[in-house]
Length: 499
Image (cartoon, rainbow, N blue to C red):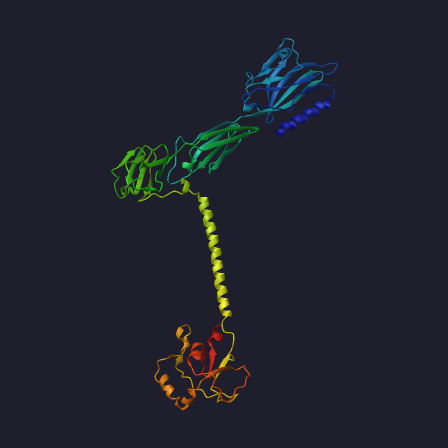
């Protein structure tokens, strides 16, 4: 094409340099499709006074070589040379007259071929001005042959789940080449192949590859071919054959004794359809009250415990056999539906569970807080004093102020249980040389032990007489009920210690 453009520029320059008023008018570019018709215009603009036209010649210029196409001569007439003789004619009838008019020598090119693509020169021979010519570039397009086909009429889904080509989209012998795209919901992949043909056309082939399955059955697959500004579409619907998908329906989880009219149905999804259904009871034989009707089991009479078990349905089509099963349980009483006979939606169950969890969490937190409060409170109420909160045991008035009377030593083998009613009284530990032995050691002070006692807080500053006897001695209530004797001769109030 670069050479043709260069020639055209040179010819145009020659025409301009002539400067004598004559010119040849043509279109610079023309195009047409294979098999169509195209008009190549050529008009001679004469000068004044006009020059004589001796001959008009159409030539095909390709790869530096000129080939005569048609000639119009006033004396010899019109001549169209092979291989254009049947396809090229002069548009104006006046050119073919005995005394022709050759100012308009436009030709009609019909039934275009790919080989017609070239540059065409229209040359005028004049006297006495000489030759005048111009050139047009003719482009021939080839509309592709587009089709879409299934790779095989029957596509079978195999358990191995292997990929296979299910459809092919072809755009053949196009010039320029086409672009192929796919439009589908299938999850597959496309492959592309381009082939350059000897006549200058291009064939584009695209295969669509998927794994055949039940889901790909009846899926639409569309091939979109874009050629220049045209959009060509073609579609197919996949026909995939697969083994049956089996599901047994009819058991609602509420088969109870004496219930009537129960049945099981073996529903399948298969291509081609299921031709054989076979029922059986796992680890046993079908109940005597059952009737087989095609793909259904009809249980006659009332429900009994005999109907419980695992029911199996084998479904067979032309591709294979698949099995479905259901476990049937029989209860003594029916499962009562909610009030109103309406089931509670699953969303309400979920909402109730969430609310229950939230309330439970709040209760647990409240219980933990209460336990912590009680624990801290009891610690605060634990004995806060010290051993200064003691009460000294004084005698019956014979001891002097500021002095402590001699007190019999307390045996070391006494224990005081913490949480029992007996804690008010000393408990004796079974050890050799117990309390009785220690009592004999107190004989020297036996006289003092018989005297009445009373308690005075160490913090009190009252004076007492040398001899005071205010009450008859009773050793039980004061020490046994409230006081705990200490080794230093003092007693501690239990109320002060525990409160």
